[in-house]
Image (cartoon, rainbow, N blue to C red; front, side, top):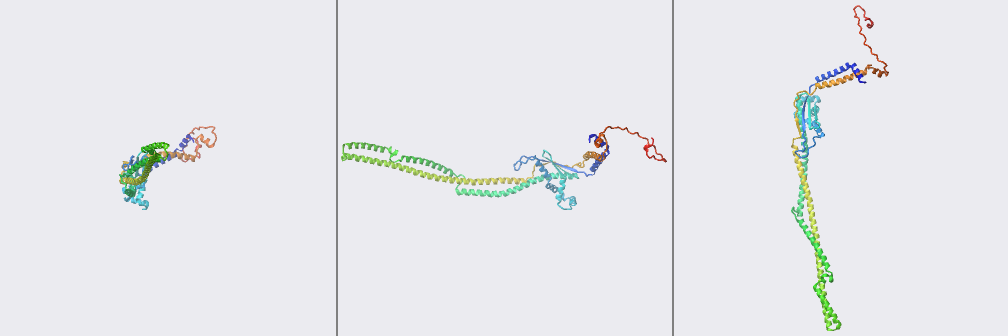
Length: 467
């Protein structure tokens, strides 16, 4: 079907289209006039974007996020918010409300729940896109009732948000209060263990024993090193008769020189006299006496050096033992200090946990008593002066548009049910034969009809009668 065929069908079925169009328009007008008038109360709410919570100092959630605004809209349309509206206005105590409840439910169920569901059916909530604005509207037959319910929903929404926050804070405060008791016991136990261990080990806050014992350990370590050096030197010097100190002694060197002189004289005398000569015997006795004195003196000096080396070794051993004992003492003090530090850290951690929980408990208590929210009523619902429905002009426009579409549709349906040949294309399309020629017929002349007179018989076929 082309556009020309469409207009030909529409022109041929114009009365059908006009009839359907008129029926739709008249029906819409009648319905608009018959329907009761409805009034809508509108409230505008704003959600403040607070970067930091003034109570706990934490960053507030991103209120510009779509899910946040959608959540707020769902809170407004929640059953709990509607129940708050019912309780705030006392709707469940009105006689007419009870009569309507009994008529609808035969007295089964809860009237508050029934009222809440009824109110939610006429409530509309629409968060503004890319904004912190929420539009709340309620529609009813009474303009004052519509405005009152809309304002009540806004106040109930603020109260619901405040209750949610305060209830959560109250639950947190109960939890923190329970934890505080446990943490306080832990803190007392840690403090008692710390003080008991400090008293048992004799450690005070300004104790300097570890520093003193460490200094003493360092001194003993230096003394041991020095004693080791002295012992090594004494042992090096005490090497018997050939020790350097023995050989370099002036008295021993003097005796050695005297012995050498006497040995020379004795050798010279032995060449002149025999062994039985008195001078020979006297010289030999003097030489033996000098040798004995030199040997005794050398032995005494060597024995003194050996005693000095032994004494130095004993002192070194004593200092080494003292150093080992001092190390044990210092290590024990360090171990006591380490254990005390562990107990102190445990006490500090318990103190820190207790103080942190106490702060959170205080914040939760403040939050549970705070009623401020980040929601404000930007515009309360005034009493509507004009009905919101039915909208006569809008319904008329929709009826005209819908009637036009339905009229055209019915015209096409009638054409499909009773197909007519209205153009050459219809013949070609319907019969599948080409059209060779198209004759244009002149309009037939209008014949004058003969007046029928009474008493005469009416012709059988008036078209065959002469003009």
